[in-house]
Image 1: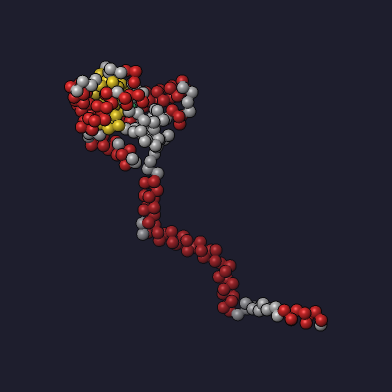
Image 2: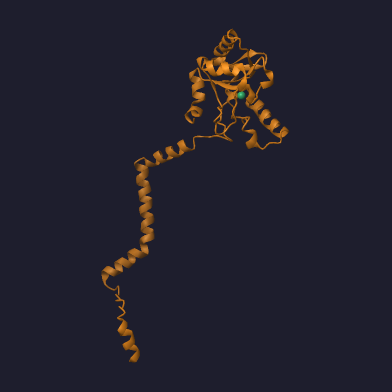
Length: 236
Ligand SMILES: [Zn+2]
């Protein structure tokens, strides 16, 4: 008795127990038990609805766009141009027929200004690119990612399109394929004039993936060339 008196003096509120035995409560219990199944059925129904109103294709399209950048080690994939679209402009240099006239005209115009451009490399087959990428990689003992900063993996080189050309200065051959080429008269002339002939520097100084290549130019003067470089230009 003494104990009860002590408890009551604190006035502890007692929980009111409710027994769920009326018909409504039984229904509620059943609902609680089956709720996971109901949620599942609802989700499946909702997904079907989404599919019907074509939200799924929209979502897929968004994902495709996001994954559209199929770069490998920073390089975009390029197909190899078929042989019949290539022309020989020098004993060892083939280019896409679309860019031949413009390229030769550019060299002629440069000559008139006292600048002597030399073509170092044009079309390269995927097989040749394979040799370049893997042989140089092993010689220099570089990892693929390192090597990819200065050379494209096979199947990922602009050179396999026939629309890329590496250019040097005939009076300063020691700068061939070197960043130092940017200090030549030839490079200065190209920066000022190449656009007139539809040529553009592919890998600028600020390029996120690939090292600066002042010698590497690409042609964008035909619809086919523009199509080839469309993704690359969109990602700039
Ligand atoms: Zn190149």
